[in-house]
Length: 579
Image (tube, rainbow, N blue to C red):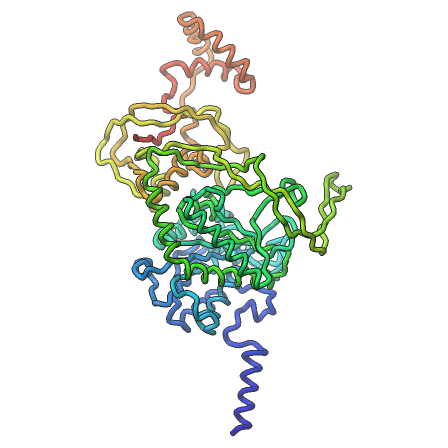
C-alpha cells in the first residue's frame, strides 16, 4: 500500500508541479510564448466560473461579427449585479484587456490571477472589500484576426490579434463618439456598474528603456483634488510594491525628440476619446497600463500580474476612502453650472522638473537611406538625469450653463447622449426660447478621414444670443447631474472630442441656396450705392483673405451673405444654452 501511495504521489508531482496541471492557462502551457484564441479564452473563463462560487461568467453584448463580449465578475459575497454590489459596500474595480488585441498581456495575467486567488487560494486576503469586473477581450473580432504579423514593434507573443474592430475602428478612440457597436455595449456596462477604479491594459510603442511598465494617470490637476491625491498615494505605494517584485514602473511620457530620451520628457494630456481621458471626466480614477513592447512576453505578463495583484490589495484597504472621494467628486460636478470648466489642457513649455530615468545606452547616427537620423539602442542599461515637462495648463474653458437644449431633428446626437446615460427631459409642445449659442467662421475640415469620420479641425466661434422656436420633441439637458463634464465635452464645440469636432453637425456648414453671378453683380452695385462703406469693407476682406476670395463666385458671395436671402441658419450651432 505504501508503495502505491508513493507512486500516486510521484504521478501527482509530475503532473501538477513539474508538468501541466488542469489549471495551467494556455499561455503557461505554451512555455509563456503564446496567447489563446477567443474560443480557448472563453472556455477558460467559463471553467473559472464553474469551479468557484465566487465567479460569474456573463456577457455584455455582441460584436459586429456576432461574438459575445465576455465579462467575468468576481465577488466573495456572491453578488453579481450592480445593485447587490452597491448594497454590499464593496468598491468596484474594472480591469479591461485586449481593447487592442495585439496587446494581450492583461488577458493572460488576469486569467492567472483569478485562478490563483480563487482556485489555488494563493491570495486568500484579496477581494475582501473589492468586486472585480474583468473583460479578458474587449475587441473580440479584432482578436480573431490572428497573425504573427500584427505588431511589428513587439516582442511576442508568437501570434496575436489585430488593433481594430471588424469595420476598422479603433475602440480606444471611440469612448465619446461611440460609433462602434462594441463601444455602445461597453458604455452600457460602465454606466450600469460605474466602477470606482478602471484599469485599461496596453503595450507600448516607442523607445527602449529599463522599465517593464509605463502608466498614465490623471495626477496633474485635471480631476478633483481629493481624487488627485488618492491617485498619487496609490502610485507611490504601487511603485514600492512592484520594486519588491523587481518590476520597474515610470510615467508614460513622450520624448521631445522622437526616440531620443536625452532630448527630455513630455507629459501629454489625453482627451476623452481615450479610456483614461474618458474615465477622468467620469470622476473615476483610471490607470492606463503600457507594458514595454521590447521586453519578452513572459516578463510583460508577469509585470501585469503583479500590478493587478497589488492594486486589488490597495483598493481592499482603501475602498471606503475611494468610494467617498468618488461620491464627493460626483456631488461637486453637479454644482458646475455657472462656473468655469476646463475642456482641454496643454503641456507648459516653460515649467519643468528634473527626474532620474532608467534608460539604455544608444547612439544616433546619420541614415544614408533616409537622410535623417537612425536611433540604435543597445542592451546596456544606463541611468539618465533628464528634464521633464510635466505641468499641464488650461488650454480652453467654458462657463457651464444651467441647461443645454437640442432641437428634435438632431436624433443621432440624442441617441449618443442616451448611450452615455445622460439625463434629459423632452419638450411636449413647441416653445420659443431665448438661448445663447455660437456662430462659426473659418471652418476647416480634415483632408482625410479619421476613425471613419471627417473631423472638423479648426474654426472660430462668436457667442451670440437669439430667440428660437424649438419643436416638440426637443430635449433639455440639465447640467446638475454627475455626467455634467461628459455633457460639456460632447456639446461644447471647442472641446477636443465634441460632437462638432467628430462631424455630427457637418451639415450646418453647407450652403444650400445659391445666386447667379449676373444677378449678384447688379445687386452688389445697388448695395454699394445705398451704403458706400461696403466697398471699403469688401476690398479689405479680399485683401486680407486672398485664398478665400480668389474667384468671382467667392467675391460676389461676400455681398450675398449680407442680403436677407442668405441662409440665416448656416454656421449657427443648433444647440442652445439656457441660463
